[in-house]
Length: 500
Image (cartoon, rainbow, N blue to C red; front, side, top):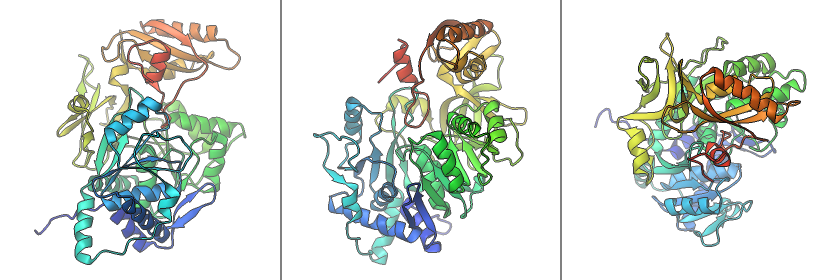
């Protein structure tokens, strides 16, 4: 039919890039390994042959327990080529979590590199090195290739976990063609070029790594640099400079850590870093100023989710502390006000024609979030007079004050300005009920006692008309993505809604 758009799968999209840039470096690691685009496709074909030899076919699920590597990237592409799907077993899953994940995903095969223990009674297991040594399958005939490519393009290629920052992670599914379309739209909005160098400091188990680094780089013909997710901030800072990274994405706390490491050396500018992106959490104006003063970079805030893709961004080249963002192309927005008298503060609701397929085996979560054609984010946003949006925190963690809604991250930023406080995390005692009761975990600043930190927080809470309790802690737990692990923290503080 005239005008019909052919669906493009992930493997084919990267292969097309390789056809244009065969000798360009596609992926390198901070340890020195690298592959060109041609070599990346060749290695992917070997892994696909290895998977097929172990019985993996279209529609099957492959579980992975892998460290960041070029081979991991190839595995994801190989799964996409076969029309199969992959699901990571997250590093923070305990034995019960792994069992739950396997029960939900029902994988046909588990791929590992031996760095973590895998369940003895789980699915058949194969080492990644065995797959990369396989003999590539012969190229299919033209007719068969067209049919298999189309089938793979519309298949689910991954079952990925949400961040788990507000409860046990939910598993959600993406189709290849919708993922490729969503990424290409975002790349056009972001102004990514083939000469860009993406620096990835996140585990490939999460969307922050794959969506904002791996496939943003590979779909644009740029270079991807894989770093050790556990490397200290000082090491990452040096690597960003050494690789002349032009693009990276990190959470606010990651940028704060880089700033602290740079200050230890006086100042450490990163002149090549033209797209330092920040998403996944509330970004305070103070972090934007610190990054500009110490690192010499202008943070661009982005907003999206594992389930929806990227929705908002601010690619303005004019440095500013305003964190307002505008929708990316193809995304519709509105606010659902939840407090009378505050129409410009409410839950952000989104619309797009290329989002995920929703949560797997979670009908209640799907009903709350995927209200087709709308996607209810669960995040509080503020609409600016210019029509942009600022993300303020989760709806479930918004507190009631005499002055109106107070999202927890906004309160935490204020609490951290107290001299005795290094970090504070506020948790609604009754999440989702919009009340004034709050529990705060506080880390004392150097040279101050826990009692001093507690007193400072109590005074600030009283100023907002909030009630509750303050708990001194040695450190704040985080998820593999780097977000605050609120379920675990709630458990430690004895609050309802905790886990793990």
